[in-house]
Length: 147
Image 1 (cartoon, one colour):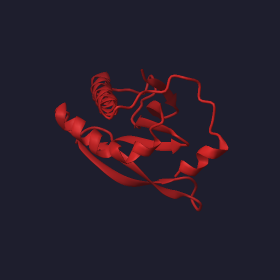
Image 2 (cartoon, rainbow, N blue to C red):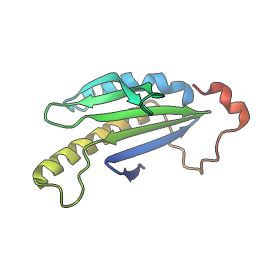
Image 3 (cartoon, one colour):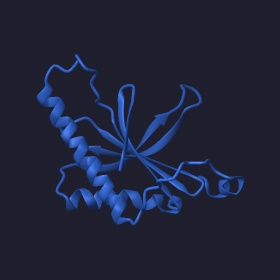
């Protein structure tokens, strides 16, 4: 179901949904409720992160998953026309040969996978259907609904 990709020091699992752009605001409460339902210990909160360059950067609102002793994971959502893009990002990816304690790496990865599963369940419970077609871009008329 998920598209897992390595982006340098990041590991991200992403999803795209057609005709779901107007439901982006529902994500935070749905994710928080799903973590509680599945008894995954975490503090789910929104925070602002700097995005872009030193002078032209902006502050972006993201959902963060915080648990003591683990790296933060971030959930980012964007709308493009009538599409909703959601990604969960693990910023603690280790390069092979750099991991000194594989038990810690496996523990962090298992927690990350539990968070990914919880996000998938929250999205499913919202009724989102993952877009399986080929993304063709956005027509000029779709730009009105873009944030």
